[in-house]
Image (tube, rainbow, N blue to C red; front, side):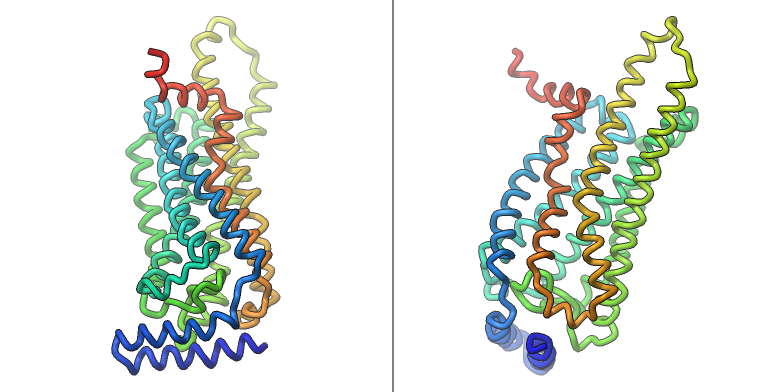
Length: 354
């Protein structure tokens, strides 16, 4: 309760000072207030180590994973298909998320005080917007990859018309526009620094913006969980399950024709390998995202938004890091499980053969 009262009193004064003083004086006052708050809201050793070691591992493995995967999906075998184009968009979204991991590693892991060195309000808006933006696009790009695979499996005659690179580009643009519109409120003047360097609450809505403050912690968090996790993950699991059941039923009911076996084997193998890559990606997203989704939903239902200040952040930090593995491990799983991916990856090193 002491933390909550300190937060309300100090930040109310902080925003009042910001409105009354000029920009330079305001920035200096924010620095001094942040310095006063820092001892009250200090990250535990576990939180610091998670961000220092865990997130260092995430973005080092992640950038290598995304760049190698991106290079592989840029090969003609993948690129000529709508599925491959969606995977390229997915990997670009992952890279944006990993960039934010670098900021989190520096501020929360290395304990670098950004608010002394940068316009922290603008940095908060940028970081939070990109973080939310990339999580939304990653989930929905993968959902449309599943839909693309489902159409190719269940309605192969329609796939020629629906699953084209042009239509895929339109879907990507529409998703990006929806994502930007959905998260645009984070870029407004109502959002900024909350408790600098205090992980979960470093950035957020200003407490003096009472209606937006209440909306952000009470409604927006639930909206985000539903739109970025629950709906897309549910659709993915249903679609993947339907494809698996359909393939099992089809294999049991259709007798192979030796005369056309040779001509169709390569096409079937290619489709199967693409589905394996899709299923791996869905499994990784679900495994890494479900724990923090359940934790966030449970916390929102059982905890008042101000009481969150009194909650230990160890669990939050560990689950956030675990979720970040979704953006870092794709390549290593693809290369281990998919023969088609390994074959296309080896083509990147054609110069070694020569």
